[in-house]
Length: 97
Image (tube, rainbow, N blue to C red; front, side):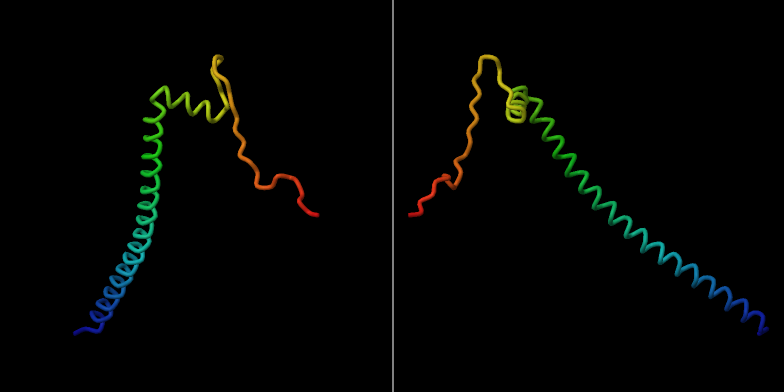
């Protein structure tokens, strides 16, 4: 066999090996990107579910008014507003003798 054939065969093998190596590296990078995208998708699906439940909750006018009253201390003109303050643990008095 001619020595040039061996040389051409060796070059072809090296080029194929280099190409396969590049494909393997690219597959690893794409796999990592796919994992990140799957995690982001799961987070967005959870957020979407939460927003849909909020939408269905606030679709009821009574719940909307309740949230308005809780957040902004809103009251209707014929209602009285009572604000309860929890008692503190210290009374402010000293019992030293």
